[in-house]
Image (cartoon, rainbow, N blue to C red):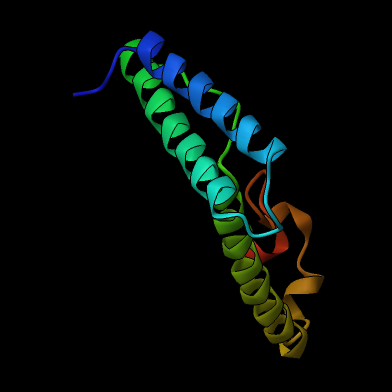
Length: 114
């Protein structure tokens, strides 16, 4: 069962305050208390975002750092795939380059005509 958005928000705010407290009293660069507080913030945010969506069909403009990293990894893989496609296009015949632009559907690119 999804919690009420107001209760989930209160837990998120408490998690953020806890994170601030341990960050201010950090004991070294790899303080496990900071890492644990970070995780509590991430989990509380996900619960709040889910509750907000369930109750009001709304989301926050925020993205978790791990999600951003995953998206970047996906983008990197897409870029590598597109580089491979570009290399294949360079080796192909130039016959399509001479085709009149009117042969393509509106909004189509040279690659989508092939």
